[in-house]
Every structure is written in C-alpha cells, then in structure tokens.
Length: 503
Image (cartoon, rainbow, N blue to C red; front, side):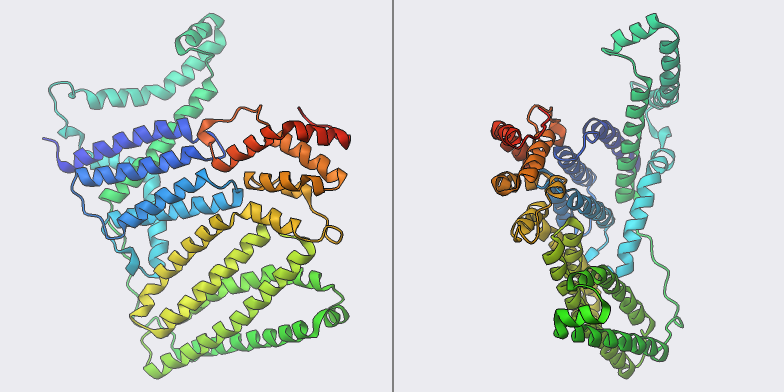
C-alpha cells in the first residue's frame, strides 16, 4: 500500500517533470513576459492543488503570499523596464521563499529580521538539493505495486534516466560520422539533429524540474530551521554600545552642521570653498550618503540586540541615542535628496538616479517604522520586520505605477533644451514604455536627434521583426504597434535629415 508521504512525493515529482518541460518550452524566450506569468501562476496553482488534495493546513499568510506571487508574475505583462524587472524577480523569489515557510505552518507576520534571512537561505538551499532527497528518501519506491501496470515503473524510469545522456552523446557522434545516419535521425525528429540543442533542452528540463520539485518538497515535507538560541551573556551592555552610538552621533552632527552651512551658503560658498560647481558637489556626494543611510539600519538593529535585558533606565538611554541618530540621519537623507535634485537638474534623470532615490524613500519609511516599533519596545518591536517587508512591496508597486522609463524620458524632456540638451541615445536604451513619449517629442528634436531617434525606433521596434508570443508584453506590443503606424513618417523624417535607416 502506498503511504500518503510517498503518494505526495510522487505527485510532487510529476509536477516537477511537467514544470521542467514547461520551463524549457516557455522561459527560453527573453525578455520575460507572458511566459513568466504563466509559469508563476501554474506553480502557485500546483501548490494550492497539492495542499488541498492532501488536506494540508498552511500558515495564515499563505493566501496573500500566493496572490502576491501571482501579481508579481503578472507584472511582467505590463511594464518593460529592465531594472524594474530585476527587482520584480527578486521580490518574486522572496515571496516564494516566504510561501514555502507559510506552507510549513509558520506565521510570517511574527518573524524577526533574522527569520527572513533564515527563510530565504533555507528555501534556496533546499530547492537546489530537494529533488535528490525527494527521490532518495521521501518516495519509498518499494511501496509501488509489484503487480500490474506499475510494477516496473521504477526500473523503467531508472533505465530511461541512465540512457538519456548516453543516447544524446552517441547519437551525436554517429550523426557526425555518417551522413546517412544523420539524415535518418533528422527524418525521425522532423528536422536537423543538433546534439548541442538536445543537450541544452535536456539540461534545462532537468534543471527546472529539479528546482520546482525541490521547492515543493521543501514546502510540504520540510520543517522550519530553528535559529540558535541567543546566549544569555551575549549582550554587551549600555556602556560600550552607548559610547559607540554617542561617537557616531557626534560624527553625524558634525556632518549635518557642515551640510547646513553649505546649503544655506548657496552656490557661491561651495564654489569658493571646494572649487566645484554646485552640481558637481551634489554629484560627488549622493551615492555615498545613500550608502551611509543603508548602513545605519543594521547598526541600530545590532545595537538594539546588544542591549537587550538591560535595566529600563539604560534601555531608555539607548532609545534616546538611537532616536538622535535617526533625527540626524533624516537631515542627512534630506541633504542627499537635495543633492539628487541638483544632480538631476544639471545632468538629467537616469535609471540609477531614479532607483537610488526610490531606495532612499524606502529607507525613510523603514527608519520611521523602526522608531515607531523597535524603539518603543515590546510587543511593537515584533512588527518591525514584517512592516519593512510590506513597505518594500509598496515602494515596488509605486514604481510600477510611476512607470520608470516613461518618467525618465518625461523628466528629461521637461528640462530647457537650450541649457540641457536631451540625450536621445540614452533614451533609446530604455524600454518600450519610453517609445510613445519619444514619438510625440520627435518633431521638437534637433536634426541629429531626429535621425538617431527615427533610426533607433525603426531598428529596435520594427514590426517586420518576428515577436515571440512567449515574451508578449503590453508595453512592447504597444511600442511595436505605434512604430508600425508611424513607420513611413519615421523613414520620411530620416530621409529629410539625411539619416541612414535600416529598413
């Protein structure tokens, strides 16, 4: 008789094989669009189906995590921004890792900061090796019926697995050695026999199958990995921690005083004192201040950990020191945002400047939440990590609403052209969301930029190019359609300015 564990393991293996075939067929087409949406939705649906079939009870966060994963997958249908897509992939992987923990019964909303690190690391490792554990330990092959149609399933499956790579190698060698045999294989396979292509497909199918099976195996069979208990004597106490925070506050205060002097002093003071234009001064400092802001959070979290168990009066002193650091940091971050404004006014907006600003906005929200939760003590401190996660999702959603590539082009077009020429070559490297704005602004460009934009749009978004349905995306589809509608006008513009256009 087949045990429930073996039955679930066999179904997970079947889902993994199906996912391997689907992944190889769909995800080979890049950039990702409809294909990733379909694969993400199928994975979530498979997890829901397996949980219901086997009457498994997930944690309370599983429904919204599944919905979030589907929404992140669907995000690839709308925007066409490479950097934003990278953030979507990271958010999707994080959501799937949290989903695995929720399927194990964990309560994500009560996690501490280190629990998120633990959840992501364990899910990654377990998904990588889980397929081997599933086949070698979870599925009890001896439970399969020894009579009837399934009695030889294990032996046949093992034989196929052993023969598959050898068949590819020997068939490729025979096809290269003898043209007649190669033609026979080509006729049997309906096309030219390409050993490299067969190997690539086989590898990708196995890789996707192993990852999905390993992920589902961890989700349903795995158990949460408990973090080691903190040693009772690990806290340093308020004296060393308070001293360190006090010195950092002194450094931050000195920097703030200098910043206020330059910002109130204006352009003349900056140019006379350090020999830089105000824009150059802003350009040199922004990303360093972003780094400082990003480092403060782990410092405060570690300091909070190191003073646990202290007397209430000493905890109150720590909170005052941490609160002062947060107040000074707000001034520093305001300085950084002001620098970015000057930077954009002088040099224009770009992807790295936009996303760095978004990161600063995220940090501002996280620091405000840190003050409201951790610095106010239990039980509010337990809400910090989950709130920081939700704020990250909110900022990512805000970027999707903002439409980064279109916003970059719109911002750069709004700057006075006489003082700040529009960078047409950079705009053409952006995604499909920038195309409508470039088409509308084309008549206002100087002749050289008209040439570059017309040629670039026709070359990249030519409707004559065959578009893979697996990579379908609304923005890319709209860009192709708009360029097709204005193809003759674009070619006419290019001819008028004597520009060579690829037709």
